[in-house]
Image (cartoon, rainbow, N blue to C red; front, side):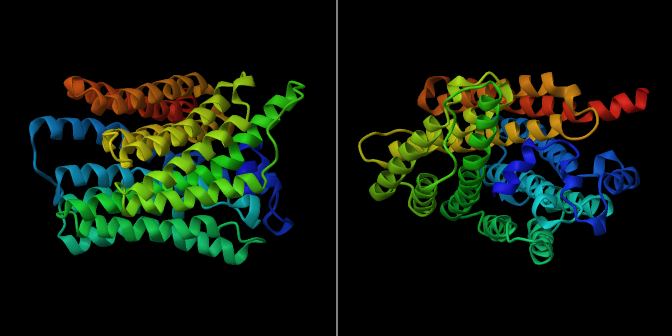
Length: 414
């Protein structure tokens, strides 16, 4: 994970410098970019873009389905379809875009690009569209195809690379594939469907704790040191490992028994430990909005864990829906957008052009999350708050998608 963290703060040409001589250097990467096209030269561009379009389309669609009272969508109960598309449709391309873009930093190989990358995007798109028209067996197959294909790519990099860093991602995608299959197969059973959805959310939350726990303090340390600050975040150490172990115990308990008292205790401990971890990073000293957004994303993880703890502990009666959306709309939505924006605005030609759009997107996604988790706490205003939160959240990803296309539009004009 450390090398994956460094990849986000590296310069656009850093991936080329990490390649061994047999693959060439910057000239080779430039040649490949010219062959494959700017859009398919690195995994994060098309995968982040289609994930953003999913966020733009799926949330307003769900608001319409919910208010219209539609009972079934693509062979699933409407609520199950909404959870499926936001957990197993939206998340995997973001995770894949990050991990596959980071592979050159530790495998010594050129990244997945060109035709293989286009086919990968096609698999993801098939998983979103085919279930609307296909019988269940085919829907199951296309649903699992994308995470399994990503697993195969990461396995190849693990075998050919100089380290085992890809094991982290390799373990995640088969879990996502299995959970997606079970979620669709047993979608008519609300309890099973909810458990599988929580599984996908827990995978993403654990990835935020693991990757964010290295990425956020590393970038913060660099920014503060560049200003000559005397106090900077401490290097990754035993405390961070302990926090990850506590989080790794609390999240599976939440998946299996979200209402149990022992789950509430585990979540409380994990939430407080992650809060202490966040405070150790000294985010209040920063003046960089893009790095502050990462702190905010991690703050949503803390909020989600503590709200889930309050929902599990007896006598508190906090709606579980608030905790769920603090983890999804809040932690996952804001942290993924912060990472996506940083990559999109620092890598490749013209990436800086959409920086102001990404800044607006980061503010809007956090506003959307606040409105969404407020809705179940203020039931008298539930529907207006849900609608406003969902539309703000989708608008944030629309702004990001527009920022992604600016270099292409600028090239077309020139």
